[in-house]
Amino acid sequence: MKIAFIAHDRKKEEMVNFVIAYERVFEGNKLYSTGTTGLRIMENTDLKIHRFMSGPLGGDQQIGALVAQNEMDLIIFLRDPLMAQPHEPDINALLRLCDVQGIPLATNIATAEILVKALDRGDFAWRDLVHKYKPISEEL
Ligand SMILES: O=C(CO)COP(=O)(O)O
Image (cartoon, rainbow, N blue to C red):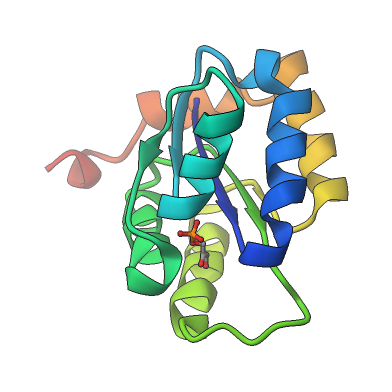
C-alpha cells in the first residue's frame, strides 16, 4: 500500500507519536510525506519515507498528483482546524481529489486510528483490485 503522512505544525507531535505507536503496521508499505512531517517521523522511527516538498511549497499538491492518478491508498492528514494556512487552496485541492478518487483519508487522530487498524486487518485489499483493473486510459 502507498500511504502518505501530512501534519500541520501543531499536529506534528501527535503524528510522530501515532506513527511510533503503529510503526509495525506501517513497515513494509511505501510511505510518503510532506517535507517536515516526514523528517520528524524519520527522526523518531526506523521507517523510510519518500519526502515531498513542505506543504506551503507544494507538498500537498505533489501528493495530490498521485491521488489524481489513483496511486495513493491511504492518507493521514492531521490538519490544524484552529490555524489558517497560507496554502489553504492546495489543502482543499488535495481533500477534493481524495473524494474524486474515493481514497481513504483521515483528518484527525480518531479516524486515523480506525483506518490503521483496518489496514492491519487487511481491509484495504480492495485497493489491490483498483490498481489491477485500472482503466486502460489511465495506463497511458
Ligand atoms: O503544510 C503541510 C500540509 O498542508 C505540511 O507540510 P510539512 O510537513 O512540510 O510541515
